[in-house]
Length: 300
Image 1: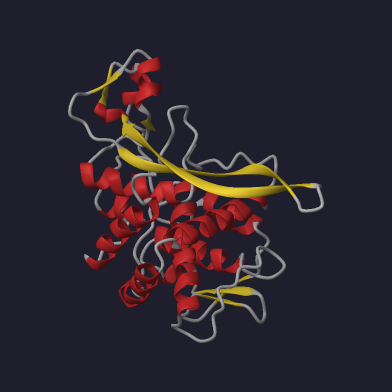
Image 2: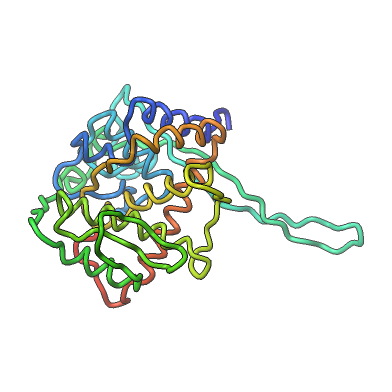
């Protein structure tokens, strides 16, 4: 590719962090989405995942787009629509592997998987004219109750995690394999409670019996610790989007920002890795839900 996708995305996240902003919370704090919160959507309504969520959330905030839907120039053209002259698209990435057959010294053949990543350009539907009317419809409002949110409670409970309440600390204890949470009533809002619980449940997925995620953490505050906290941050943001909740920045974000900046500046692939791990954690928590559960309130 002519441009370094990893570096371009990492530079954007670093710039946001240096400004004291969390890219994954900006869609809410900046109010770029009206009504229901969703992940960015493809032209067919399927959500983007992983690093593309962060990239398109950030692009929406920067440009002030209200619509979550994006598509390529060709996809718009196939619907008889056109991108307005002068509009600039945004980068998304596609990762996959290709299989290559190689002949060995002994004459045998061996297949080898080679990972690759390519970037392509998408446009928000607000940059496109002539699409079917439903692409321009605004999502309906979500009324946030003042108390517990049933579909979020159901989702968290269905993970089967050992969630205990009491005290003033929210954390995952690896030794006893349980999530510790302050009581619900002690949070400033229902959304703050569920966002915090989603963060700790993302940590819960790192257990050896689940996703076996280990960044070589040796002590509090080291690079491995920072990487795991970044995964938990993104995992919570992804889950909040899936559950149509509004996450809120925690009181400890300022302390984490400097350690995250250090990790990202030293490794241009770190945010991609963190987003991939966060997506796997969110997918794992979704996989624990009852098959018959429709997950009412989950963003499509």
